[in-house]
Amino acid sequence: MLSQPVATSKFLSPAVASPARSEARPRAGWWQKVFSFPVLLAVVLGGSIFVFDSGSIADPDIWWHLRNAEVFVQSHSVVHHDFYSFTAAGSRWINEAWLGELPYYFGWRWLGIRGVYLVMLAAVELILLGVFGLAYLSSKNVKAAFVASWLAVWLATVSFGPRTLLVGWICLVAELFILAQFKRGRDLTWLLPPLFVLWANLHGSWLIGMVLFVVFVATGFVEASWGRIESSRWIPAQRTKLAMVGALSVAGLFLNPYTYHLVFYPFNFAFRQRLNVNHVDEWMSLDFHGVRGKILFGMLAVTILLALARKRRWGLDQVGFLIIGYYAAMTYSRFLFLAAILLTPILAEELDFFPHYRREVDKPWLNGLLMVAILAGCVWRFPSSAYLLRDTVRYYPVKALPYLQQFRPAGRVFNDCLWGGYLTWNARNIPVFIDSRIDIYEYNGVFADYLDAMGIKNTLEILDKYHIRYVLFPQESPVAYLLGHNSGWKSNYQDGTTVLLERMGPVP
View 1 (cartoon, rainbow, N blue to C red):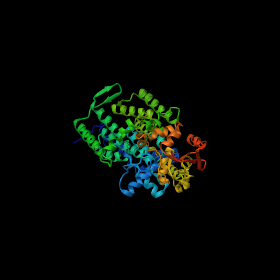
View 2: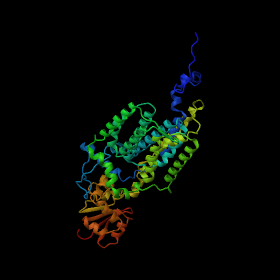
View 3: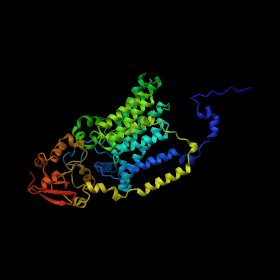
View 4: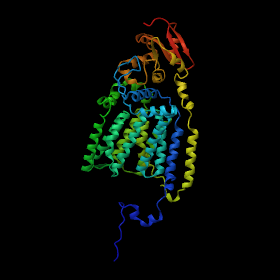
């Protein structure tokens, strides 16, 4: 009896639909997978991330992050009130990144400044290699995914540094992977509630993740087609699952040491901290004259041109993510990293004209040699502690530190804002006037007074208002110049970077 022929279908796996082809392509061995061309591209991308990094940990926030983490490890309690400054002492403070500080702290304890750098580097590598994976999942073309991800590295350099924001972006990549798998029929959404619990304690960027989740779910309630944009409705089971997951995720946000205060903090930042947003560089609009601005514009232009030329159909959720990514990056340069994460998978789909990977012509031995060479180069180039601290020495009172650690001020010290965290960690005998936790100082008017003093607007009156005896500033700053030419002040210390000035007469 003759058997019936097997009908081929796009829903059958290649092994079922084309057995002859399966026999022609035997399963790859482990060494062929490990030393395959796609893995080589991942290693090249990881190496380029290492090369693009400036090798600097000169971030004003890392120092008070380390101090907060130290307090938590020693007392098993998060910081609820300020005790680093004299201007905001005792004020309630929400440390919205309390959990994201711990990796940096343990890196510092185990390996010093190199440990902090390793934590930062590992976070950046994990994010961008995750973006590379998302781009491949979206385009199924590893070469297109690599090109799009390599462009993303340029945008991401805006946040290369020891920042708690990076752990938030790791959570974002994980969320996008879960949502992408859900669209492909693999339900991992049960991971979202615990992810948001973790995210809410790591960094305030959880709000971005929640907005993207809402956009993803909302676009599935529309059944329509507008030109090349299309959307399909969720089936009832999917709607029920997403609603339950969303409710549990929102509830999970409140599982934190600050309860509802932490959940409302991002809204407080958006609507109450206007001076913070208007005077911090990373919250400025994108400069299209710079390299990152030109690359973002190029990515937008290429995406539009290829979309018009190739006539690919877009999902409504993709359009939503595209708009959010470009708007956020153009409005605030800080969100260039967000744009890199959101836009890379979309751009990779448009770059699908690159030839696809062919395993049968791959050369694992050559790939392996190149991987070893790249990894050896990264190990050889790994920065020393002195190299990592070069910008810190240049822009912070590092040379003055031995003097400052022995200094016992007989009055209040007015310090540079970006130096406050460094003093909090390294010269704990000096209560600071201000540091880069701008929120706590904006609420009570200290930050506004600081900006006036920095702008040589009523500087002497402000120093009198806060009963300042000492001023610790960069030697080239306008404040140091003003007081250095004022007979009522004298210089107690200067080293080319730092100057410590003291009031000659009694404090008003």
